[in-house]
Length: 330
Image (cartoon, rainbow, N blue to C red; front, side, top):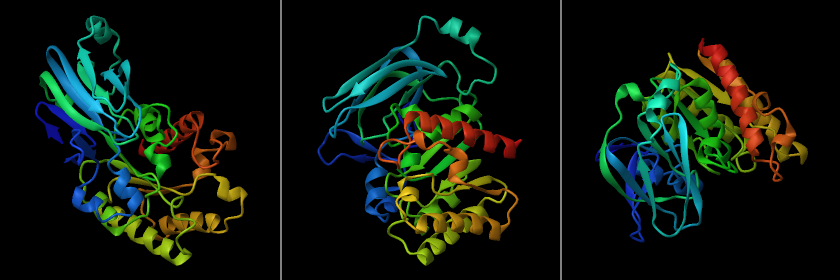
């Protein structure tokens, strides 16, 4: 969405904070959000994959953010170049961005295949908790089409796609996958909330701004859905999106290695098979099944909860996923 002379990437709309502390980034239409399960309803307000993007037209700009629910981190980039890390807490935090003195040299060393134009400022918002946007100040202009990647990747899934346990906002596996592939990213991960609702399928299917997608399915419902319920959800979710995007690559990811494999949750393998079988049944040339263990191959890539990947696990997943996608799309 556009706010003044800045783009709010991966933000569908801004909601007023009930406490008056600014505005909250909502990653899906609010009328869809309120129909989702409680986890997705809440976590759609966490700004994973969201960025404030603009060109500086004056000497500096300032973005004020607030995190009433606890301290968190935001990153600042100049194009692809990392600039700064900021702690956002319950007090309004003013992030001042100025044009780097080294910008002429940065432009000289920017490779031709860089994702972002070096003149574009990107404030990458925290993946958790829900931050408040208080203000954007300064003389700025909107990103030009040639300053951002022309190919856009949409990632749907659980807290693992959302980014739980990532140390920094750009450390999630979708963010790193997008970086490795040179694409932009729409992150639709919802911690605890990937329940494959029909409304979410319809929403993703109706979007025309993405060129390939990953759909991570199963981990959030393996202990709560029956086998039939999961099959029906997967069938509608995958079919609806694939029917609407026959020319776009769609990668269906089943359950990553996790503690349920070690503690005897019998539906884990069944749910994996359902994802694989639905992709096979549809038999579409650009619909691909990816086993979770093709991305995360090492159990020590998990954190101590044996569900969420550690930072090294996220990196392993991103590199393996990028290789799989690259091989299919080229």
